Length: 359
Image: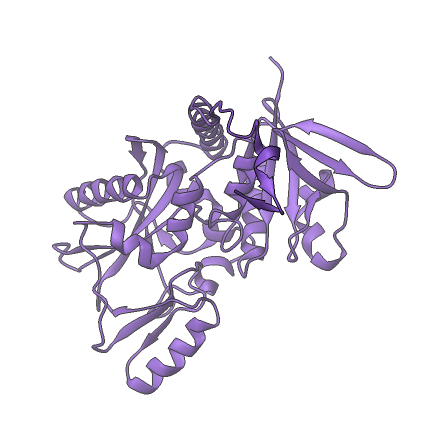
């Protein structure tokens, strides 16, 4: 059986660029080389798509991002086309594994590009990816799942509607701090969320895997923050393991009935955004576990949330196998639909043009 050509896309025009590089490296190192030909596609800070070689699998290669250069690629017709002054090469892509975080990669932009190029890809589609980045849109779709309320009573959390990795999020306790926090959030997005702080609640996260309504969930985790809020440093600056290196308790020390309710809500949220492939859903749980709030859904979680699936009996290479299967299944299902319609309305178009205007 011939190997599948798997393009791993990572980097991108995002404040989470470096985090995406870590996830991309984790993915490339855990793809089964007996099954796949791995093609690194690094997207630079300024949006150039660069086809990499084996050097792109080495962490030390990314110590100076400004020096990275290689053939720029174009995606079209189910293929990747790379060229420079000496070579032109076309390779069929069986599936693209997306390892982006943040804007222009996690938010539906690259997903739309791949749809146009006819390339299968892992994870959520265009709409679900866009909603997965927009916290205000999520709140409108989550329906009867309990949520933290938008509020003006202190203490509060101020967040950019679009964003991730805790970037731009501030906890405030008075009007002066609120004004400053809004200014910070506005540098990342034009739409701002101001919501009540669920004081004393613990953060509990879970991952969802599947397409449509055929979903499974992982064990729950409890991240351990160093401060009142789980910061970017908590998530990513504990070595070079990305989200996998953050401090957390797995499984979370909560009651089985609480875990079951969280799993139910997570599946409901995933289906509400028309999710596919993989997501991580974050919740807030009261100390007595009687109150559960959904916080947000992350359609492309750091490190692919593989640490949750490993604790659920699904090793990272097998998780990637499943994500590729789901991506190809979704592509085949989408391609089975009619996207053209035969019509002769253009047959006499030339005769209808008079004076440069359609009559």
